[in-house]
Image 1: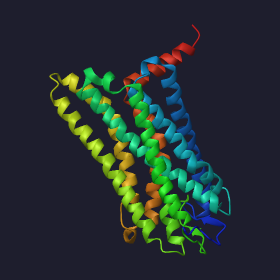
Image 2 (image 1 turned 180 degrees about the vertical axis):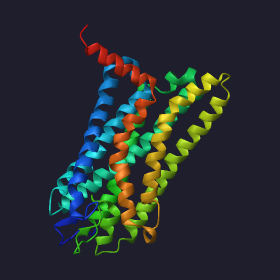
Image 3 (image 1 turned 135 degrees about the vertical axis):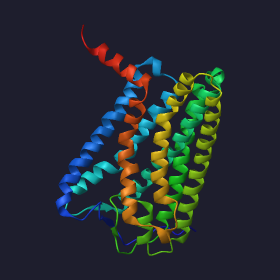
Image 4 (image 1 turned 90 degrees about the horizontal axis):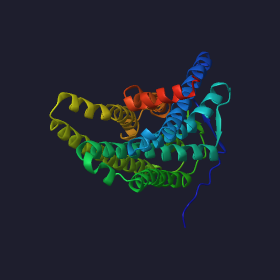
Length: 311
């Protein structure tokens, strides 16, 4: 019979980004602005894609799902974080902490897999343009998005079950601004070696599989671009990938730095800085990355604005 949590800990106290009281209000204002821009940018991207039939293509279908994932992703952290900036007692119930950890694992994994699916979409579009609509059908695109969320759920459920099997009898101070798995494992009274190994293995396997898909896609993209005769054609083909390549580099770089390392070398202070980047900054940047360098999105935004201005 499985041993489930018999913890005496009813709540966790979060240290937050910093314990300096003079920085709480400035940080509250900064992250309120970041969260606001995240919501406006990502909801704006979703509405823009929905309103413009010219953007009803596989590429923008994936982009709208990425925006939705970013909204959910940042909402897991930002509201609680902002409340804690204004609170003297930065606490979270045990169940609240487990739920935050669960949804974090769902969305961080989903986003990573979704980015790899978007790389494959770009590969098909550039390397096999004549077969693009045949290969990337609506059914295939929906299936790829569902696989991304399924991967996130499987990864999250695995770690959450492992977390619930541990005992927490004190201390209950989490050296982080949210309930991440590594700092929670350090507070357990039980042997968390199995959990640490599962975290390392699952993170490593997911990162490796998605990295292989991204690398395979971009190697084939580069080969296809080299076969294009005109310099203008090569530039146009690569420009469709530049935004995605930027998003992939930022996301995978920060997440890899945080999780794919042994616990003996794990620094919570370094992880906090990295975590701010991939949990709050990247969801804010993604709509900018995909719109500022994307002519289709900029043209669609202009049409939407002009359509609402009375003549």
